[in-house]
Length: 487
Image (spheres, rainbow, N blue to C red):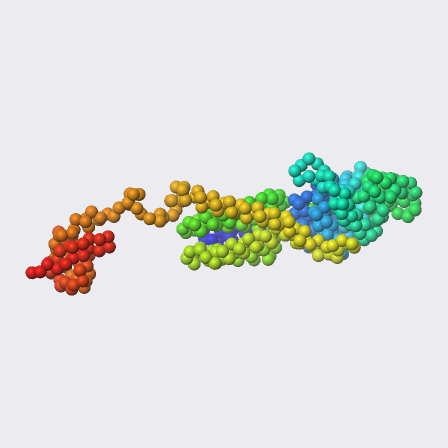
């Protein structure tokens, strides 16, 4: 199998794994002839980076489908603020594209889940549902629970989240006082119909009954538009009772992509090391194939996670082309191979930065910038460089000592102490002083017959005609020197 065939087969296999599949809910709703479509995105468990990988594809799929509505089926205790901000950006981009987004709290939308709910056009809750308690906290990186922060740092972080929920409430028509009561315990007493529901010093947390209660001072529900115990009643409440439901499901390839992105620096580092070993050994073999395969696995996982795109693919393919050119066409290893490795590293670094949708930022808040992902990207990139550096050092130190390396690479010298001797060294030494007859003229090189052996010799500088008697005066590793014997 050639290198080109190997690359083609690998990419086709990755494309098969990455092919998205949208599964429709079973039931009569699928059989009804209606143009209306509803796309349901479940948010189950903690909101972390692995969930964000899945949701990037989910929102891209929703954009291609052009559904009549997107419903977020929420059951989450919360999660990271950075990932929550990006999910909110995807929701806002979907809504600005003309597709309404609704939140279904089924049963919990706490912390980050409450922030996501405030970004939607409407909130519906199941009977046991709860929503609220969205004050930001910092977990200790070494474990041990919540990390206590200095007062000024805590206020800075709280102020940013407070601005976010106020902006979301203003944008989507929710109560600003309610939003602040969810995130800041020092809020004024939160009242419903003149009754204090959440006094100062506590975080607001609402049940489905409390959230759907009508506030007599405004004539509107406190937060939720209604209580729905299943998806059918929710669609009826949204005016989409006859819509076809398409429920997003995570695929096997996305679960595989989570492992790839988690082990990304190690996979990329090992891939570059395999190519480095290939350069140190003759020909093209298992190390070259392994290195290219690891690079493709790395790119496949990050593409599926919504990180890599066409630009990164072009850089990595160009880098692989330059490496192949260095291996098969250009002798040695120089600027072409180095350029190929640099292009691969550049494409890998760009593949760590997600493609965030461009939306108008919330009032008082800066837009999501790629600089926010810079620390994580730099951390992964440094891990990758460390893997490569340690690997190169170990290869230089220990690989030349292995029998495997000696089976691939020629020795730098063939010494007598190692058992290497010339086959005719003894014969050459015994020729000095012997006489023979020239078979051809020596000008100064020619052929001489000595003791019945045909030998290539050179004269001591004189022209010696054929059929002349000669004597060996020196025998070196490169030549046998003769002189003419006078008649």
